[in-house]
Amino acid sequence: QQRVLSGIQPSGKLTLGNYIGAMKNFVALQHEHECFFMVVDLHAITVPQDPAALREQSEAVAALFIAAGLEPAQAAIFMQSHVPAHAELGWLLTTMTYMGELERMTQFKDKSEGKEAVGAGLFVYPSLMAADILLYKSDLVPVGDDQKQHLELTRDLAGRFNHRYGDTLVIPEPFIPKVGARIMSLDDASKKMSKSSPNAGSFITLLDTPDEIRKKISRAKTDLGREIVFDVQNKPEVSNLMTIYAQCSGLSIEQVQAAYDGQGYGAFKKDLAEVVVQALEPLQQKYADIRSSGEIHNILRDGAERASAVAEVTLHSVKDAMGFLPRG
Ligand code: AQP
Image (cartoon, rainbow, N blue to C red; front, side, top):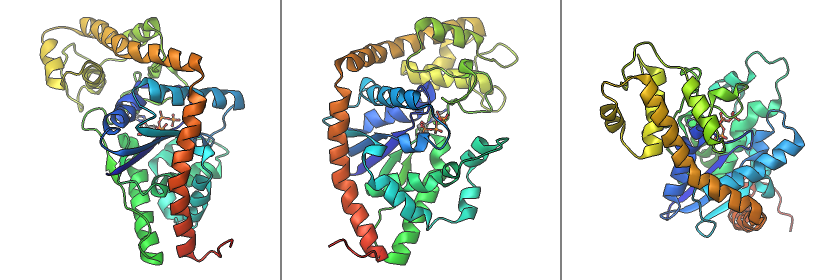
């Protein structure tokens, strides 16, 4: 059985982008693979987080994993910080990562742009992400398109380690959806939808109320013209909305385009809002149930135990290969 690992940062409220680009695939993969899905809180602190907000968002992301359809009996669901091997392997791999490699990362460039003080954690984040993946000897990593570059680095680091110290780590493959790998911001289709954007109107969260969703979609930017045509080059805003429509309704892009042939933006946006509201309704209901049950703490405890058992074995073999003296 192939092993699958991925994570989501509790750096804000999860967006439709996180759901369509990543979480939907977590759910799809859980029955055929051995899965590990974590809330990557150590990554979230690469930018400042308010402690109370971090705690709340961490629990919320874990509950959303379940609400989206992950089954704790199938997949180990856990907090990254509950498995100390992540931080430890993260350091070991940081020592093997070149500055030039990190400087080329577009996410680092985007997130540090214009900031006076940039934390070193933001810079070395990709080495920690590599550790997350390599600890589980993961074969597949379901992620959105924005993580492709980090995954390439992970593959390079695994290869470098194996070359230097002997075959120890598994080189993972990205698993990126064909449609919806990069959901764009509602106010600017040149930027990806992002949960930490300062403009709340630019993203839809999985927990937005129906009215919030309707308002955000009605205000979403649209291109010139009025035809509902999928053309990412010339109609990026409408194409993005069509992708959201397709992903939330289960229709193909072609079916969406055919359904709105000859209709204008107004009718399309109105229907889109209802499609999104309906897609999120069962998830929101389940989310409320899980939060009120208090079950999440047991799920996370069990998930961390299962994850630690695998992670410790890899960490041990990595340290052994590198020449660390065993504790005895
Ligand atoms: N806009 C997106 N479209 C498709 N997939 C996306 N992902 C993120 N944004 C989109 C995927 O969601 C997973 C979790 O992402 P993350 O929490 O690790 O952080 P991120 O990639 O940096 O996502 P955000 O929402 O933009 O968070 P912030 O604002 O904190 O940086 C990943 O698989 C990602 O590809």
